Amino acid sequence: MLVVLNGEERSCREGWTLADLVAELGLAGRRIAVEINRDIIPRDKYTSYRLQPGDEIEVVHFVGGG
Amino acid sequence: MKDPFVLAGKEYQSRLIVGTGKYKDFAETRRAIEASGAEIVTVAVRRVNITDPGKENLLDYIDPKVYTILPNTAGCYTADEAVRTCRLARAAGIGNLVKLEVIGDERTLFPDIPATLEAAKTLVKEGFIVLPYIQDDPISCKKLEEIGCAAVMPLAAPIGSGLGIRNPYNLRIILEQSRVPVIVDAGVGTASDAAAALEMGCDAVLMNTAIAGAKDPILMAEAMRLGVEAGRKAFLAGRIAKKLYATASSPLEGLLSA
Image 1 (tube, chains in turn brown, cyan):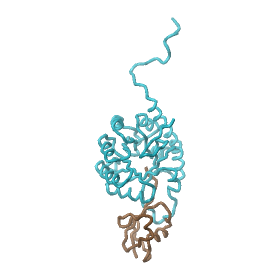
Image 2: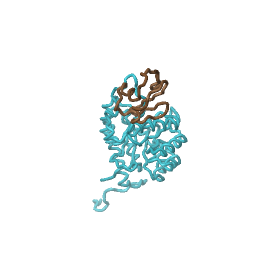
Image 3: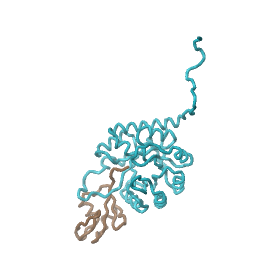
Image 4: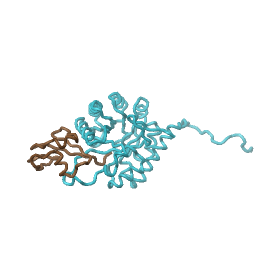
């Protein structure tokens, strides 16, 4: 199944939760924030959010800035 | 001498707020911040690089337990984008403090004032502690204070320009009228600019390029720390009035007679 992750198409296994994707990316436990279809998903909902085909996912973190 | 800088109910010893952009690497960022003595540091919110997501992160070097992290909305050109960025920053779990900037123009990076006011209203309502980057304009500053911003952050000059305080008279009006801290944000070029801001009575100064862009950023960070400290002390000490003619420093009595 295809989702859009940070603007790029990416295939995900059916039935994956957001927590599975975050772990796959090596970002589990990191200071990130996730938005799916413009809604912020709180950290404690990662395991219950089941990814849907076409989900538009944004994963952000902090970088240097002024 | 105890003279804390109080921002949104929290006391800080340093009146210098520094950015984390434009450094050679994270190690240099950390060393510069240490040399600056800053306790509040700004960061930007950006997409994780999905092709290399696990690589080192800024916050591996700048410990959020030690520093107050101040996420910015740099690069946002609308109120909606800025609000969205702040919500994401908060969801990442480093608190409610945000540096709001809604940019109006790419060349000057001057703020879009109506959009800044609009975003500030929404963010204050949502419980954010809002520190807005704004033009050195007393009316905008007044409105932001009325909306409930925790400080106002008028620019000294365009972001990254290093021109120093271009409009000290507007700043004086802003200082006179404000009941929230006034933080000079952007435009500082060197230590004397930082000192000048504090000497005038500004509560703090925020800078990035002036340190990161210096030939020796670590040394400049230290210079800025000293500049801010000197300026603050001079403000508290109360400078002498300016006079057109001389006043002798040595006594006139006991002069040798001709």
